Length: 516
Image 1 (cartoon, one colour):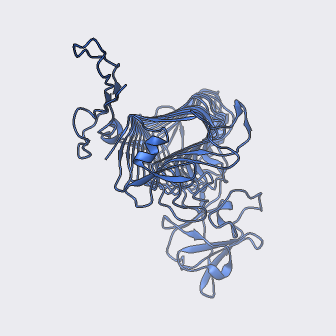
Image 2 (cartoon, rainbow, N blue to C red):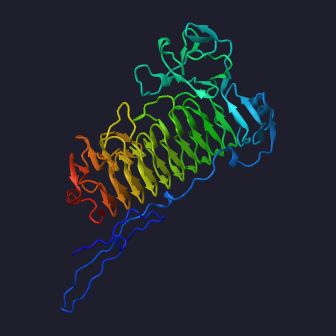
Image 3 (cartoon, one colour):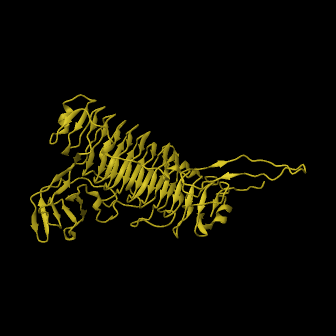
C-alpha cells in the first residue's frame, strides 16, 4: 500500500501563527483504474501547521483586584486573627481590614471558614528590625533569630546550603542575598549567626525599613472547605517543602498575591478537590505552588513567575514553578514563566493528571516534566524557551533541560503542543526507578502525537534516551503525526545514537509526520 502525506493541503508554513489546530486522519480509500485491479491506497494526514489556541490566549488579571468585595466579621489591623476566629463558630466569613497585618503565629481556620480582603490588605510574616549597631564595616542586631530548627532541602550551593534556613531579610522592600559566613557580608547581603543569635548586614540600615521574615505560615491546619481570597501574603519564613499558605481538602484559593516567602508560596497537602485560581504567585524562595497527596485538585488561570529566589537546586529539586507528587487533577490555563527550575513537574505516582493549555516559557529547567507516574495527558500547551539554566547538574543532553520530558512513566499522551526553541524538544527517558503504588515504574504506552516542534538551538534534539538497566521495549513509545521545523540534519536520538530525520523514521518513529 502506498501512502502519501499531505500537510494541511499546502506546504508547511511556520509564518502562519493564527490560533488554531488541525489534526485529522482520514480513512483509507481505494481507486479503480479500469483494469479490475485496486488502485493505490492513499492515507491523507493533516498535521499541525499552527500553534494551539493557548498561544494566542491572554491570561487576564490575577491577584486581589480580581476578588469579590468582602462581607463578614472584621479582623482589625493589630488584632490577633486567631482570637477573632476562636470567638466565632465554624463556617464564619472574615474580612481583614485594609492595611498591614503582622501574623505572629499561623492562622488555623475551622471547617468552612472564609477569609477575604482587598487590594490594600497585606498579611506579612515579617517583623521590623531595629537597634542596629555598627560592627566594623558591617551592622549587627542581636536577639532576633529563632531557636535552631531541623534543616532540609537541596540547594544549588550544596556545600554551604544557604537555602535551608527560612528567614529572609528585606531593606526598603528589597530582598537581600543570604551568605553563610561573616566574612562574606557585603552590600546587598546578610548573614544570620544562629549560634550567637545575631544578624549582620553590609549596608547602613539607618533611615531604612529593615524587615525579617519570621512566622512560618499565614494559614495552616486540617480544616476543610476553607476559602482564602483577595489577600496579599508575603514574607513568611516557610520551611523547604512548606507553604506560606497551606491548604487542605476542598479549599478555594482565589484572587490572592502570594510573594516573597522563603519556600513554597501555596502548598496543597492532602487537599482533595481543592481549587486554586486567578492568583499571582511570584518571587517565592523555592517554588510557586506545591501539591502533595491531593486528588482531583484544579489549578487554573494563575500567574506563576520568578520563583526560586533563595537558591534551591535548579536542575533537580522541587524548585521553580509548580511541583506535584502523588496527586491527580487538572493544571490548565496558567502562565508559568521565568522560574528558576522546572516550569511544571509531576513527580512520583501522579495519576489521571491533565496538563492543558498552559503557557510555559523561559523556565531554567524543563518546561514540563512527567516523572515516574501514570496516566497523564499533556495537551495543547505552549512550551517555549525552557531549559537554558546553568548550574549544578544542568546540561544540554536529552537527560537535561528541554521542552517536555516524560521520564519512566506509563500511559502518557503528549498531544497538540507547541514545543518551540527549548534547550531540547521532547525527551522520552527510560530509567530504573523501582516500584510504585500502581505497579513498577516503567516507560510504556507513551504516545507523542500532533505536536508542532521547533528546534533552533544548535545542540537541541528530540528522542529517546535509556539507561542500560531499562532499555525501551518494542511499541512502548509512539511518535506520530507531528510537525518539525529543523535547521540542521541531526536532531533525533535513539539507542544511544544521533539520527537524521530519515534515520529517525527508519527506526520506526513519525512515519506519518513531516519535517522542514
